[in-house]
Image (cartoon, rainbow, N blue to C red; front, side):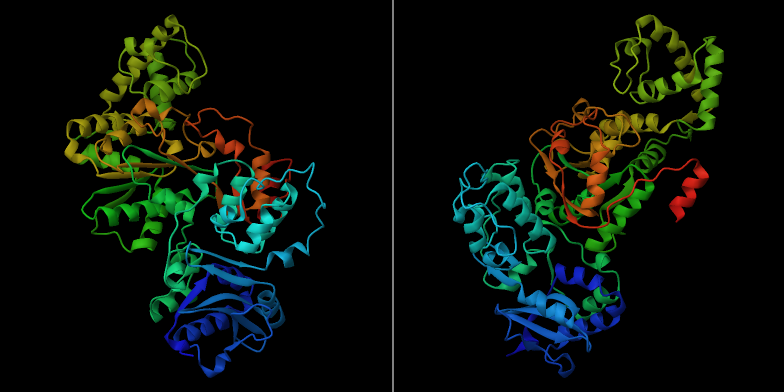
Length: 569
C-alpha cells in the first residue's frame, strides 16, 4: 500500500464533526496535518476497519479517546469523520461510501434496507396514499444522484415516508445537499424533472470527482495550505460553493441576470464567486462589485479576496455605489458641490425653510416623504413632469391642484440647494448616469450588484448606465425583496433592467437553522408589495434549511431598559 503517494481529500462532514470536539481541536488538527503528510506515521496507527459491515473504512488515532474515520477510494483518502472512539466506529458501521464515476454522484448513506428497518412500518398497500415518484423509473431517480438501492425504494415510497427519508438524509449528511434539493423539488412538483437532471460528467478517478465538488470536499495542495486551513478559521480558507450556486455563478448570457433567494441562501457568496468567475473569463475586463453600504462592500471585498487573493492592482473594484458615484462626480465631472443627506437634520432645516419661503402650510413630514420618494429619487425637474408622474412608492394620491401647490415648495428646495452649493446622493447618481451615457468609455465591462433590492430609482439609473447593454454578462444582480430595508420597491424594467428569462432562485439555506427559519417565516406577511417578476415564488417555495438548532423563544418586555437587559442576558 503506497499510502503516502495518495491525494488526501477532506470532506465537509469532517469539519462539521470537528466543531463538536472543541476541547480536542489542537490534537485533531495536528494529527490531520500529520496524516496529510504521512498516513503511515507510526503514531497514527492507521488501519482498516475489517469488522465494519461496509468495506472501505479506515481509521487513524488522534489520542487515546479520539478516532478519525477515513474512506479508501483508489487514488485518494477521504477524511470523513472524527469523534470519540466508540461513536466514531459506530458512525462508520452505519454508513457506506458509494461513488458513481459515470455520472459524478456520491453518497455516504447506509443501504436503504437498514434505514427502512429503523422507521415506522409503511402500509402494505399504497392505495389511498400519494406515491409522488411512482411515475419515474429507478434509473431516472438515479440520474438525480441517488444510490441504486435508494432509487428502487423511493419510487415506491409514500409521500409521508419520502419526506421522512429526505429529512433524515439531510440531518445525517447521507447525500449531498443538491441531491436532496432535487428530490424535494420533484416531490413537491416545484420544477419539472428535465430541469432537475444535472449535467452528466464522467471522470477517471475519484479525486477528480471530489475536486469538482468544492462545496463538499477540499483537496489541500500543499503543506502550507494544510497548516493555514486547520490552524486558522476553516471558513476563511474553504469557500464552499453548492452546485446550484455554481450554476447561478456561471450563467453565461446576454442581458441582465437576476439571482433571488431568501436569507441564508448565500447570495453574497454567489456575488463574490461571480466576480471571480468574470475576472477569470475576461482577464482584461474592468469589473465593479457593488452594494448599498460601505459595511456590505467591505464584506464583499473580503469574500472575493478569500477566493482569488488580494485585488489591489487588478481590474476589480469593490465599492458601495454611492462612493463610486461620488468619485466619478468629483474626478470625471469636476463638480464641487457638498453632500447633504436626505433625512438629516440639515436637510430637514432646508425643507422647513423652503416651506416658509413658498408661503405654504405643508407639514415637514409630508414634504420630506414626497421629496425623497418622488422628486429627488426620480430627478423631477419641472411641474409638467411632476403632474404626469406615477406615484411609485407613495400610496397617497395627489390631485393636480395639490401637486401645483407642492411644486412651489420643491422649486424653493432646488433654489436653496443651488444657493448653498449642496447636492444629495440621488442627484449625484442621476448626474453621473447622464454623464456616463454621454461618455461610454467610463463604463465598466461587468457590474455585479449585491442587495439590489435596496436600490431606488437614482441608483438603478446609475447601475444601468455603468453596465454596457451590448456585451454578454455585463450586469448581474442579487436581491431578495423580503429583505428590503432602505427604499420602496420599484420595477427594474423601468430602468432598462429586464431580467425575464434570466432569473434564478436559490433554494438552499446554509446560514440559519431550520428552527430560526420556521420562526422567521411565521411572522412574514402573506403578500409583499414590490416583487420583481417571478419573485412571489419565494413565498410559496420556502428554502431548505440544512442546519438544526434551538427553537427560538419570543420574549416581551415592559420598556427599553428591560429589553436591553434581556438581550444582554
